[in-house]
Image 1 (spheres, helix red, strand yellow):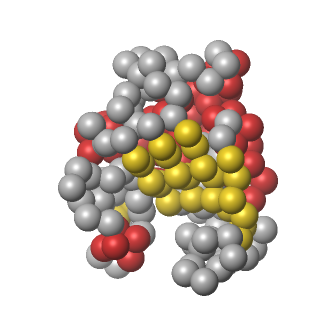
Image 2 (tube, one colour):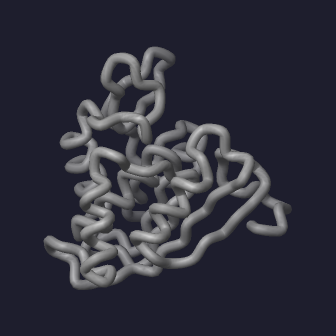
Length: 173
């Protein structure tokens, strides 16, 4: 099957054939899509994502030809930016789960909203977008996922599992 961009957790990546790893190695053997400047501990707090250019390029390449794209956490923020910039021209359906506000790229999302949901770049397609969030998310606050939703449009699915995809058996799943 074609690759499914972007995801950040090894567990999620293990469940999705062809899912790419992030581009920034972490100390425990995993990967993230970018690093933080000194003194910053969350993506939504950073004015800059170190390595974001490489992450955007890698995820856009992994998403080439994909009609369905799934992003979780950092991957959801990355996917939001790629959609707003029109870098996934074949994407018809996108799921953004556990997204925070992509602060360094806020203008990309706001411009997308102000253009009526039309991306710049190579995409003429306006994909269906599902935003998955939880009031119990302690990593990326729910309000930030809803701000991404206000810019990209689409539907919202809420669940009670926190910073996770809704588990099997959850009424929201």
